[in-house]
Every structure is written in C-alpha cells, then in structure tokens.
Image (cartoon, rainbow over all chains, first blue to last red; front, side, top):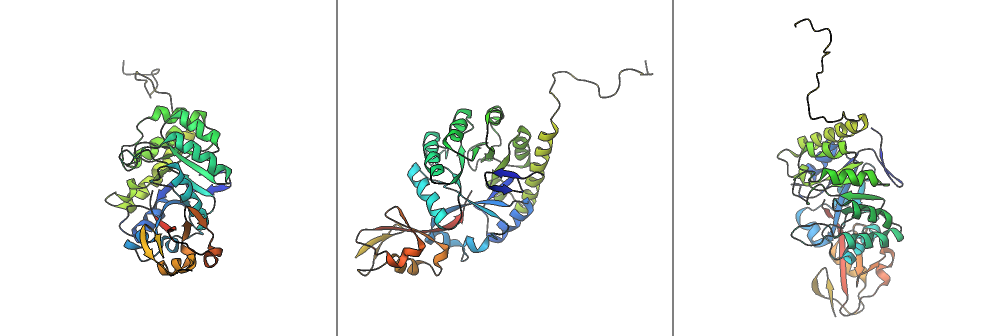
Amino acid sequence: MEPLRIRDHVLKSRLILGSGKYRDYDEMLAAWDAAGADCVTVALRRVDLAHEREERNLLDVIDRERYTILPNTAGCDPAEDALRTARLARELGLGDLVKLEVIADEETLLPNAPATIEATRILADEGFTVLAYTNDDPVAARALEEAGAASVMPLGAPIGSGLGILNPTNIRIILARAGVPIIVDAGVGTASDVAIAMELGADGVLLNTGVAKARDTVQMARAMKHACEAGRLAYLAGRMPKREYASPSSPVEGRFTG
Amino acid sequence: MRVRVNGRETEVEPGSTIGQIVDRKVPDRSRVAVERNKEIVPRATYDATPVTEGDVIEVVTLAGGG
C-alpha cells in the first residue's frame, strides 16, 4: 500500500494508534504490532502522574527506529495550554510533529474550532507540522488548512464514544475540498468504522479506545489493520454506483427456461 | 524559599537551580521537559537557571494518550 505523506514525514501504515487506556505497556506494544502501525500518538503529563502507574518511562518503551511519535495536546483548553504542550514536546526531542487538540469543554471533549485555527497559525509559524483535530465541519477544515495545518483530522464521533462515522456526508465534503491529508480521528469503535472512513477516501485513521478497550486488544488491532487496507483498496478501486432497483448479475438474454 | 513544582508548594534552598529541582523529581534529565513560569527551560541551561520565590515550574514527560 502506498505510504501516507505528511510534509516530510512518510508513514507506511495509514492507521495511527494511541497509547492510552491499555492495561500495561506490553499489551499496548502487542496491539501496535498487530495493527501494523508505525506512528503512535502520546500525551504529555507531569512526571508524577506519568510515573504513578508504570516504572518505565514511555520514551524507553517506544522503539524510535520503528515508530514515529506524534505528541498530542489532548485535554488542552484554552489554546495557550496547547501551545505550551507542543513546545514542551519539541523540547523533549519529539521533533516538529504535533496533533493539535484544543477542546471546548470537558463534558463533550468536542474541539474548539476557532481556538484550534488560531493555535494552528501560531504553531505553523514556529515550524511545527500541525495535524489539527477538529469537528466534521468542512468550513473549519478549510480554515485549518489555510492556517497552515499539514493535515486536518476531523472526528468521526466524540472522543472515546465508539459511535463510528456519524456524518459521512461531511467527511466526504471535507475530502473533496482538501489539499492536505485528511485523517479521521476519534469515534472509531470497530473495524467497519475504519473501513467506512477509508472507503470515503480518508488518507488515514487515528484511533485509541476502539483497540484499547476491546475485549481482545490484539485481535481488534489486527481487524483494524485489515479494515484500513480493505477500505483503502475499495476507495482506490472505485465503488459501483448505488441504485434503487435490482439489476440482474446474470445475462437476461439466452435464457432457456421460458 | 517556596516554589510551585508540578502543582505542589515546595520548599527549596535559596539559590537552587532548575537542575536541582529536576534531579529531585527524576533520575534521567533526558526524559523530561521543563517550563518555568510558562516558558521552556532548555535542558542545556538547567544548571544555569536559578529559581526565584513563587516560580511555577512544570516537569513533564510522555504519558499514554489518544
């Protein structure tokens, strides 16, 4: 499968996985392996909290030769906190990539689009490669691209909801108007959700909870990988047009049964 | 002298540096990034950066997330 290119970054897999909600690091690494991912997203937190659950630091767990680390600004509100987080990630040696997430409130975790657009502009000016998480809103997606986003990441459904692609029409409109890679991020609950996003023409899918909270995480990661590839192939193949009435698959002519 | 480190009021010796505060928190400086009053403190300058009364210091690292 052809790689996903985001500016200078080349990802072999179109599936980006998160690092949250796993029982432990070993389960997480096994899931990443099964998903065939080569890009993973991580959060930044105070060392006290980060070290509470596991002795090992995530930086020591992730093979940097194998995985591109995409730091995220998850949970940041207001935009200033997202800017601080992006700069801290770069200081940590994680490079210029950032998944910019500016949320509007803790209850919905929905993106604050105007604040995300402004933060995108600032971080792009500072040399970051910004992957901007946003609503499934074609207007916001266009504005983020104009603000300098290297990729726009519309949600399928709210973070952690597993509701799938709630507005495929809007995702299709975003894709039709996009000049940068579009990665569907959030809301993916199971393999068919990934396939639908990819069939619509999404350049990639980012997911976390759909794998981390599956009963068998490794099995689900494998399913997500196949769904991503199947969806991509179906998109490239070009699906048949839908029609309201039946159309026989066998020839009508030459029938000998009357 | 009191400073705030990762949200906690902390007593430090006058003349303390960011380097000393980081070393109290973690064994390996290369695994953290540090902010002092919302400004990045580059790792190379930890030992040359003194803290002053009331400073707000954040020592962060990677954590699992999506």
